[in-house]
Image 1 (cartoon, one colour):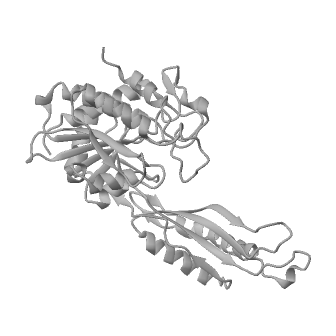
Image 2 (image 1 turned 135 degrees about the vertical axis):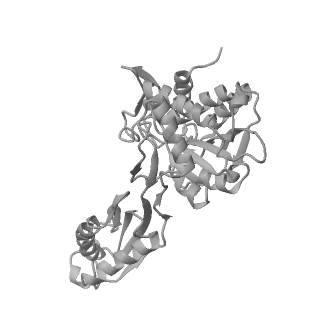
Length: 383
């Protein structure tokens, strides 16, 4: 007997796939996507399809999917959803259901999209005559940290040949055709350590960073005046700070980590230069160092006139869903797709507001809508 999409989702949630994000203290039984990838592989084999396995640069972590092939002259549409989740308590790995919603880590980010894509793939595989494009469905590794899975997608066949992609993320079953760029880097101030009983003998790196932090807080108002008609405003946030070795030692080092969200006004490198410009304009005289960018993705906007976007709008109209595309500030694997020339939009069930929270959940209504949407994508006219 075939599993329904709710059962698939509950089984996916129960398979731990926490992205360790560089941590080595997490138990192996909770980390990595291997368990989910094996589930996807068995599901694909049950459809009598040949699994696509793509190795990443990460040991024991790989992409898993399948292809419905219509011919070399047909364009390829890629549907992808990531298999990893952020960290959680073990209790959140036990799926539950109440009031028409499924709860558990990954429910909407991103196992809801994955479950719906897999179920739709099964339906499409049973009616191959209704398929007009080459269709690939992939479960992707490492979206939550270093994006090694999406880098494998754009480097390896057959996914790198895709001309259009739908990235499953919780968009409330709406079409996301634009998203802000991102720039992340560190600023480090240096000083001179000495005993805290006579602090004048040293140079306090934390005090120096304090002046920079005050300037960055003021810089937010300058960014708020920068408008992009589609993507909104620029933003900046200082997410981490680290400095000092002990309370009785004047610190000789302080480091902050910056997160900049970008419109089309700035490239990631331009964003760093503009922050430096602002600090110089405020007379910051202390010595500080800028790290290389740890993440750098340009903002992207896909016109509503693009044939792929128009096709998705038509599907939404058919299903009674909102067809009006919108833009978001959060990132996804769509960054890498678009940079590689694979036009990518974001569409998926669930709300980004519950993603990464202890109460992560998804409505069963949206989950069923996602199945219908993805199946219609697989059966849409040739691009």
